[in-house]
Image (cartoon, rainbow, N blue to C red):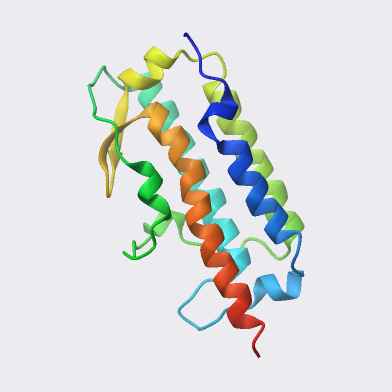
Length: 170
């Protein structure tokens, strides 16, 4: 097999869950924070956007400048396990650039188009032979990074659901 179909990475099905959820809440709810040190749904959406952009940039850089590197498969599905907190790197922390769900959805659509364009016509062998490190999992090949984007979104979908539940109490 020279290329994995984009649906095999689970990106679209996971993104669909995010979009269905945010379509069920108002902009006002999406801007509310459960606590001063917690992110709102809009901030979480911005984080997802920034993270996908960062991963895309890293993949592009690795494709252009990387070299072949063997890696082991990582249990990236464990990304959804929120029992251990992971501090987001500064460059993927929200800065308040979205003021509505629609803005966030437009940005997420753009970052997803970039992802799909980036991996279009890339062979599985190429994606599996190049890697860069993940802060928790260590060296991951590009194919796993692509799949990671979706698992990361599901991690934060659960967080968004909690945020809405918390801000709806008051």
